[in-house]
Image 1 (cartoon, rainbow, N blue to C red):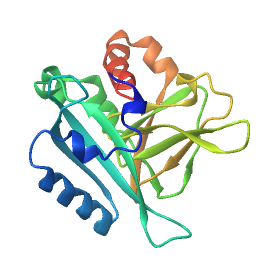
Image 2: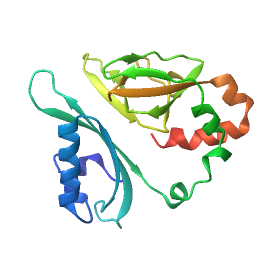
Image 3: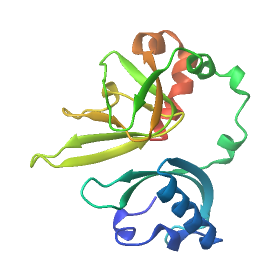
Length: 193
């Protein structure tokens, strides 16, 4: 972990440990295809050892200009995540096989107080409003991540589908409370955000 001020105004490619050209080519692909892309890359944080991160990037067309804005989700890839058990052994596997709620880019996702959402596919923007009425990005939720109004203390909290096809599964809080194993499997997914 390091200060966000160290990143302000800097290109992410400056932190890429090897093959910056490949990283830039991946970004160009995201820009031209306009969808969500994921890949793993090694980066060197300021005064630290290299770490592997999973990069999730969505290209969102700007309304007034002809360019695109990149929305980023960076997650450290740990060895335990790489060697995760077979998904059939995981309670979340059965949850992901439930009926999915489909959303398209720009759609507002309803937030229930007695349930959380599991992202099965796509990218979701989580935001709030500042006192001056400006939207503030709280985070991004990608595949395998959990979000919901019960996971925040913010009074105003909004979720919007960022990618073309977003698929979500609703998990009732009562079900999580009734299953300690499910709760233990969901906790790391909440911490990933």
